[in-house]
Amino acid sequence: MKQKPKWKTISLSVIGFLVAFQFYQPARNVYDGQVEGSDFIQVYNPPKAVNQILEKSCYNCHSNNTKYEWFDYIQPGRMFVESHITNGKQDLNFSEWSNYYRGKQERLLQSIVTQVEKNEMPLLSYLWLHPEARLTKDEKQALINWIKDKK
Ligand code: HEC
Image 1 (tube, helix red, strand yellow):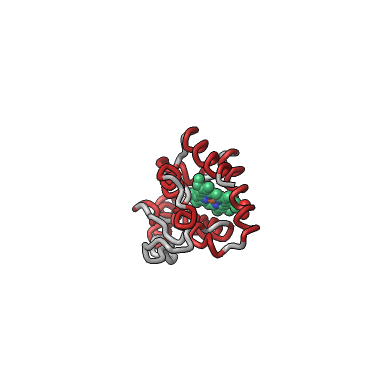
Image 2 (cartoon, rainbow, N blue to C red):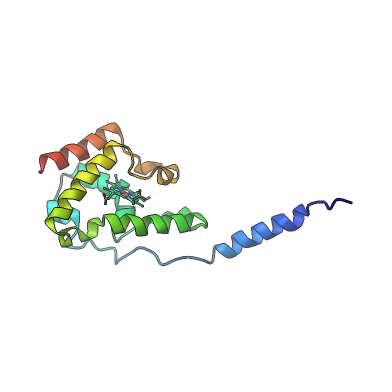
């Protein structure tokens, strides 16, 4: 006789696993809520519109201070959020801007333009849950123009 799948046991194990998973909460990316002197915005003092774009769409992954939403704490999402922050900061950390040597700053400024033009940033998977980070055409242009003008 063929054994029937034990759906009840299977679903209970899945639920149990998800509940246990919630206890895994990696360290949060919050420095002390202060803007550091080395911060990109402190260094360049861009117009307010540009600040807002960077803060709402980029700083959560590319700075030392993430503004978490309640659902960012729910696993397995939490794991992805934290790995995006780690990888994002490794490539570009706006909080550490003035500590980068000049060549690196120039390469990164160019890279920001390319990433935004090609819609690679903010990451698509992030936008599903954080639609407020989506940039309008005008916002993208404002950011790109400001970077191009300041060179
Ligand atoms: C959800 C997190 C997240 C957000 C939000 C985000 N990024 Fe990223 N960013 C990453 C990750 C992760 C990488 C590393 C490369 C990859 O995985 O694609 C990256 C890479 C980059 C790079 C490449 C750096 C290099 O070395 O050339 C640039 C530039 C960049 N991001 C700019 C931005 C800008 C500008 C914004 C806002 C408009 C933004 N990112 C928003 C996570 C994010």
